[in-house]
Structure formats: C-alpha cells, structure tokens
Length: 394
Image 1 (spheres, rainbow, N blue to C red):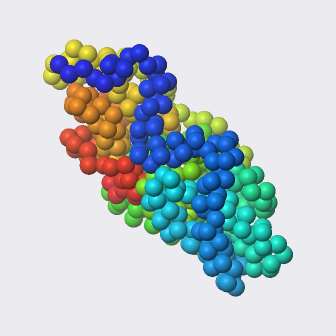
Image 2: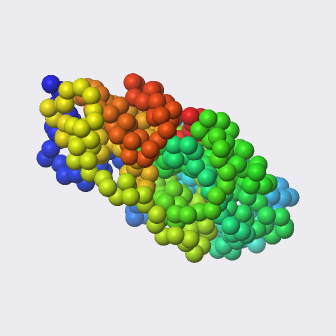
Image 3: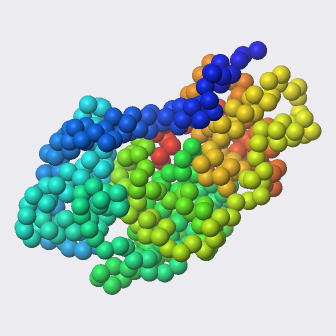
C-alpha cells in the first residue's frame, strides 16, 4: 500500500508542514514570499527593486501628468494604467521582478522629486488616495481616509464560499459610488478575484451574479453584515504578500485601491465580532473517522486516521467559519493542491475525497443537488496555479 508523503516527512512539525504547504500552494506565492524574505528589512535589496521600477514609474508619471483629469476621475485613470503595466511586469524573471508595491513606491518618489509642479501634485494626490496604509507609511504620503457613506452589505453563493461585499463611498464630486469585492474562499487563502466601483447596488449584484454563475448565485440578494470576524478573514489586507501570482490586468487595476477601501470598511464598528457555526468549532480528525466507521461504504483504509489528518491539513481553514463548505471549485482546488504536494502518493488521499465531501455536506445539511455537483469534481483536478486567481463560474 502506498505510504503518504506526510508520513514520510514525520520528522517535521505540523507547523513546518503547513508552512511548506502554503509556499507550495501557487508558484507565484512562492516567488513573492521568497522575494519578500530576501528584501524585507534589507535596504540594499529594496533599493535594487526600486531602481528596477524607476524607469517604469517615470514613464507612467509622464503619461498621467498630461491628463487634465482630477479627483476620482484621475484616481480611476491611475488605476486603469497600473493594471496592464503591473500585469506585464509580473511576467518578468526574478532578477527583473517589480511588484505592485515597488512600482507605486517608485512612482511616489518620481512625483515627489518633481517638487511644486502642479501636474505632479495632482497625480501624487491621486496616488495617495488609492494606497493602503502600509504604502503610505513607506512613502511618507498622506491622504484623507475614504468615507463609507452607508451600510456595508454582503451576499454569498449557494455553497457559501463565494462572497460579494459591497460598500458605498462618498466622493468629493458628490455622488456615492458602490465598491464591490468578489471574494473566492475556495483556495487556501480567500482571494479577491474581482473588485471595482459600480453605479448602484443592483448593478454590482448583477455583475457578481454573472461572475459566479446563474446556478451558484441563484436567489442571492444583499444582506446586512452579520459576522465581522468572517468579514475580516475575507477582505484583502494591506500587509499581504505583494502578489499571489496569476493576477489579470483587471485584478492589478484595483490591487492597491481594493486594499485601501477594505481598510476603511474594517475600521467601522463591528456589528458582530464573531459568528462561527457550531459545526466549525467541532473539528478534529476523529470526527471524520467516527463518521466513516458508521456511515461510509467500502473497506476502511488501514491508515484511515493518518489519511484523515492529511486531509484536514489540506482543506482550507484560514477562514475557520467556512471549513465545512465544499463547493465544486473548492474540491477541485484541494485536489490540485494534493497532487502538487503528494505527487505519486496522491491517489490514496484523493480516494478519500468523495467520503470527505459527503461528510461535510451532511454536517451542514447541504442540498443533494449541490453535494452531487461537488462530488463530480473529486474524480480529477484541472485547476492550475493561475486558475486560483480567476473568476470561476460554478
């Protein structure tokens, strides 16, 4: 009988195994994190990346300084130009790598060097308006905090692991604009697969429903935030690694601004600090083993407990309240992760996946139609690293 890879690595601590899994989750995550380890706290390394970013920042500043736009229109123009530029830079080899923060830090430097130039000051104000707090601290810039102009709302798909978060923001020009985060929590970390402003809550909801798919988003509507702890787990953070890898130009367009606006939302007084389902608190490999021995069909694997522990470590848990969700995309993402990590020893663990999905669906009372769609993805994974960043229609 094949021996699982985790058992071969038994000398490692659980923390070390999980740290290794996070690095292995996507190729670009490994790239970004290893780069961060190299340059973090090292002035020479940071200076090298800023030097690589400088010519791109100079060209971008020159383009932006020619536009007559001001205020939110200029912020939109800045974001629109950052998107394709950052997408192109993300394709460069490691020795030429320029991340989103390197580029905006270099851009701030170029604009500050322009002194009292009126056009440069306009662009600098727009840049400060979209940067999260960590970038503002690095560059020494300052800007008024975005003003949330009403109730923040959310909704989720039928499996419960794809979210839309919507917040209204005031603008100096007067009209309120509605910002949407489309968050997919099916992979190891929740990812904002889409973000942007919309003219109304209805327009934002319709766009999210198209991105999720008619079946998965069927019957959804905006609801009040009832779990601030989960919202905190879902929204992007300013101190995350510079990029996960596989982002599209559209995602890079809102890369900085979606973090800045998320900070404003998370600074609001929480409605509820935590609302973790009781089933999510009742976790442990022994729960699945007990279920298997009373409900599952077929012979019990000789190493069931070890395999169950490996499945627990492979299943997304950073948003603890979502542990029991088992959408088709989550099943496929986990299958991909298992094959990437365990390689020739993956089959034994993947054979446990149908029972795992059945167990989770019984814990949450998932309708049979949804369970069957999830089970259909246990047979093989077509997901790739870059797929983890795209908007998936279930």
